[in-house]
Amino acid sequence: MAKKTYDLLFKLLLIGDSGVGKTCVLFRFSDDAFNTTFISTIGIDFKIKTVELQGKKIKLQIWDTAGQERFHTITTSYYRGAMGIMLVYDITNAKSFENISKWLRNIDEHANEDVERMLLGNKCDMEDKRVVPKAKGEQIAREHGIRFFETSAKANINIEKAFLTLAEDILRKTPVKEPNSENVDISSGSGVTGWKSKCCS
Amino acid sequence: MDFHEESSPALAFEKDAFELTVEDVYDISYVVGRDLLRISRTGEEVSDLQFRIVRVLEMFETMVNKYNLSLEELKMERDNLKSELDRVVTESSTGQETQAVGANQMVVDLSDPNRPRFTMQELKEVLQERNQLKAQLMVAQEELQLYKSGILPQGKSAMVEVDLDAPAQNGAAAINDAKEEKTTIGKL
Image (cartoon, rainbow over all chains, first blue to last red):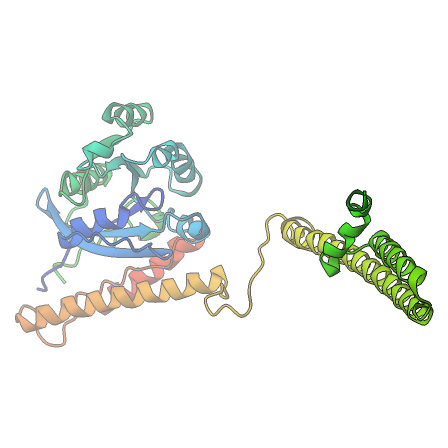
């Protein structure tokens, strides 16, 4: 009997304005590191991180998108496959907060209807440069019925919590399969495309 | 008396040569003529000199006249060229955005080695390939780790997880997913 490497595969997506720290948030989560030099993401990139939730090994494939408008056509083509989307803004950048509604519209247009959404106000370590009050983030999240965290990739605040919460929310919606129900119908297009059971071969 | 008389026409003698006008030449000739008249009252050998001086003054008059006209012409020519240059410069700077190139177009400097030259589709393909290779590398690394640790028996590959399907192109994605899934399962 071969050891399985994971029970579930969740595909997540990071979106938001250029420079809000999407790549840093992901880098903190996947490699527990932080880099101060700003390198603009070209188009689309991804990282893999396996976590354990409720006794299940969940492989998170996290797509990191370029925030720049010029990559828009490339990045939006990745919305469809995502089961969870993290919308990131920068608490020191008012424009990035104003653009949230634009990003939410993008989700509505391009992502699956049942996609799990989450709002992150990043760079919360920079309190002296804050221009977006926490209450405003909470308010817009409430209006759209989505979860909200203020995070700091630099100071490692709420990063893991945000990813694990998003994964949990997706897990809750994922129909529980019996271990012997392998070869699940993956053509259904529902949120279980990543389901794989490799035991008992 | 004398001093007072001479004061105004004689000033022409003190002027810069390039500032002289034809009027100044007349002043000079007036003064010279008057001086000659004084001399001629005493002797008569000056008449030849008088004609020569008149001739020189005439030449002087012509030259000053010509010089001033040329200077004026050149000044006009210069001003014309200046305004023409201004017109061309403003036309090219505004025209670049409005008339020569459309509102949503940009000018590409073909001599710039860093100019944009690939299409979005090409970038998309390169990124897809990069991400696919990255995923395959991860799978290979994972398997290698398992072989090394002896968890996986030789020849039994259960860990094929190439799940990096191309970005979902709506309907095509599910089929793509399914296809990859089948190959994975087939290897079990």
